[in-house]
Image 1: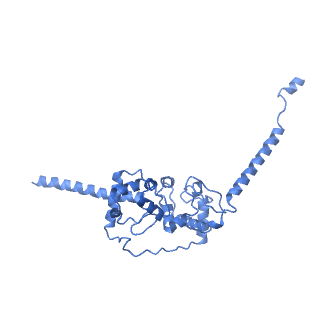
Image 2: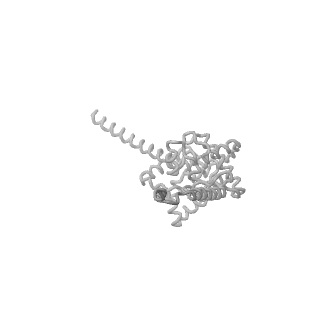
Image 3: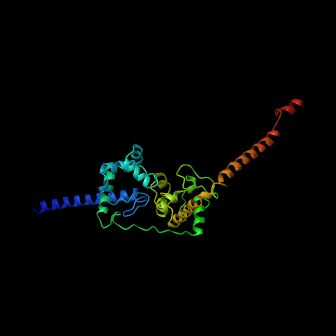
Length: 277
């Protein structure tokens, strides 16, 4: 009888540990893939996720999470409405997640929705705190963005992939989104969240071993806010002109040097003197 009870006790422990592992998996997946853009109880870059399981069917949520843009392009009314509500911010496709992974994330969201967190529909609106950045933060952020000053952990400079229209910077890379108006779209919380824990695969991989520290995140956010605020006045003396004229001038100088060297080239055979003798 004791052996029989022990058997079921062990089975119970195994099942309990399996259920705990499942819950932890859902939380871990959520933290890895969702926290940069979503918060419980407030809007950030994306939807407040409290109660989302009741607002949409599981099938719809899985499709939207896997590829929101596909649903938007197909004309799904709810997907289009969400896209417009959040300033047409493109949500990353989560095609690397299996259907089972997404279901675990949805279970975790449901568990948080039914906890003590108050739904945003019944909670009082959260007043956004306006952060005033110091000029030194803006200046330091510009140096970090442009690569004139290296990040503490040696990560690649932002300008390698991103452009910001600003007369004090040369044109940036075209591999990623233009960040001139990023602050208008996402605000303090959104910008700093994306910088500190990016949901974008390329950016996340680039800084995986070279994370930015909290001070650098503040300084870059300060610069992007400033760049957004003064963007209407920029573009008149942008680094494009300097790049074009500087590059053109360099080519002209190179051609002149080639011409001088060519003018002094050897005009006869190397055996001409021997032949004359």
